[in-house]
Length: 386
Image (cartoon, rainbow, N blue to C red; front, side, top):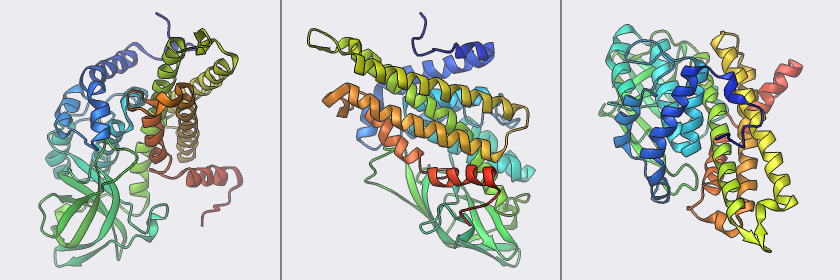
């Protein structure tokens, strides 16, 4: 059956293997995740036990080569993120942080020993990773971080705090970025290291089916082998964030698609004034506007994916994709809630859950304001945020 939302024949732009990966991930989520999502979201619970299942599915670090990683192309990874976020942003966030932040930081900047120790376990979901960059007072301006790493003989001593760290409460290893006398450097901090502890952040109104934490480092002593040897300067963590942002610009399309599918089905079933509400002109205008925005966002995501596969994508292009697609997805989620009326505030339907999640997605991995200024700098040559 033809998908009514596919106005532009977007599947024709995908290869057979890419479509197969997308379908496989969608089936897994339909069977294993979607039935329990309302309960997990309401109870602010992320099921850690699902990590090995995601590893078996092959989506953890799937765009990386070797060490148990699938080595898929960029669009395949993006399509997996699309399906994950169509279920819930929390699950795309888990996969994104695991693969594009934790694993990518080790894969690109780690020693061979670090790669061998962590990447196979992280790819299998036997271990969970997190990425400690944001601090309580330094989010959009990570260069001002206060976390410090000081040499003590052959060792390093780390002190500081990281905030809003996805997976932090359950992570087995944290990639922590700290200022040193030689600039910003990355360190791998295993759970259980003396002086290292995590505190889960509760009472969230968004990303409730995801675990978020504060990382506290109080005199954490690490051997020299814990430092990521090839990470030098702020460009290293920012390159990891670009990997995560790429997954987000696909994921937002999935959240928007799920909202619109829900609203279309509801509009056909909801009878008012003796006819389905989908038959009214105002409702059809909403559907038409949202479908155009959704299809345009999908085309943008695939185009950027092809650029990434060719090694030609630029940071400002990823910023443009994240800014546009998350903004459009949030607008679609809110509009779909209006189609559902009062029923739209129930967890029985997904749009308001997606809207709440997308409020976080709009902010993390670079706020909408920062991505706007990145695009502005590309247009004018003037860095307005400095």
